[in-house]
Length: 564
Image (cartoon, rainbow, N blue to C red; front, side, top):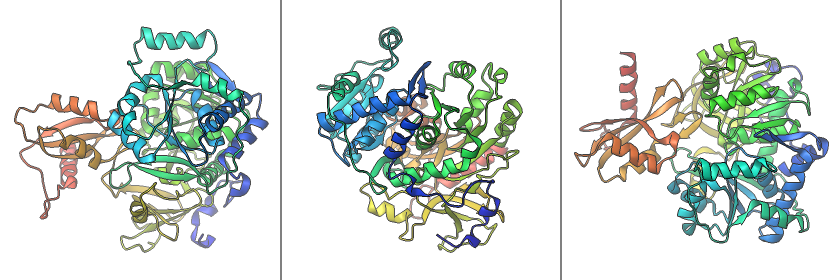
């Protein structure tokens, strides 16, 4: 760490926030979990579809799952298990069960295509997976090409009790037809796994800060999805950092938090699972936040006090019928991350809810929190806030020299929340993480004299769609496989709903290729947020003198067109 004189943000910390956290508070995520379950045993931990699970019930169920993993499947410390489901009660049960057994969790977006799922399972070497049956057909397509030996399948209504659970599972499968036909030989139902685990001895695994808790996949700079290795120490650190920042504004065991962000995403994983659990909050799980009518109905039914989200989520709520008439008297913290908060959205949010929309900043590689605005901020300020406790932030030039206050350069981060590196990719790790612990974020920013950080632009060509990273290299690689495509470039263009969307510039190989046909191909090969919204066919694409397609020229053209 640098001398405190080089940390101007410390002088502007909210009252009660320490300059550093004591990472030794918990030796592992599991230790935090078990402590919270003891302290808040009879309080509700998570609520889904109106059904709550107490901390004691979560403790017992996760212990059974851990026992089954260790005693039934003989999985041990460091083995990887993939989780592929939306926000349901099953997620925290299997998550903490896996961690208690010493396993490393690989979070998977349940909307992944077969191609995307295969890559992540193969790369991580996951031996087991827990999947919601709605997405089991995708797994069935690729399981043979992966190292997955053990499959646990769960239904939407599992853990919701009788008769609600079975009725919901039946309706989803047979009435709404939301479960495509699948075949996964040897699979085990989650209910059976929990029942078997109850008859097995408890799994007790010694864990410390150096043990690997998560492989959290991100595209990085190359577009090839890589697993950021997040240790128990990384996750404990960031949880404590965020708790130190917001804890004074919240009451242990009394908060009602909303988890609309998917828990497989690092923002939600740390905020909605780890931080809220340490606070003893009742976390309301929103399985489908795109259903704004249902979302508003849920918000109407609970005295919610903490609401994290991305800009598009807040914007969607503000335009949802009935949202303005909700009771916001309990709302203490509204936290925006994952993508830039738009000033117009923040202004309207404050007017409607009375709560300042606090912008924060982080990366998958930093577990994710780096900077956050003070909870007592009066109005949106356009900044990503101040560095969290025990975090160093600096602005560097292209030749890796620290720049003076106010100058623009690459945002650099150092702290206990910074990842150990990328899984099995020392070359990629070396590109972003120095021996001195400084992480290259790839974002361009500046810091003012008070220590507030502002993001100016992104150094790389990454496209940010509703808080999700989309990497042009991946999109172009997929589209270039289409037999009718000769050349392709993918860029991000502004969108009022999702911040940015993907636009393709394509040179045809087959003159008969249509926009509709190419969009259908992308629909089959790419997750929803990666699919192009616009496609423009051209006779040629701009290139450098060595033949490299110049995406920046295409983006500049789009900028000029938007201003015309």
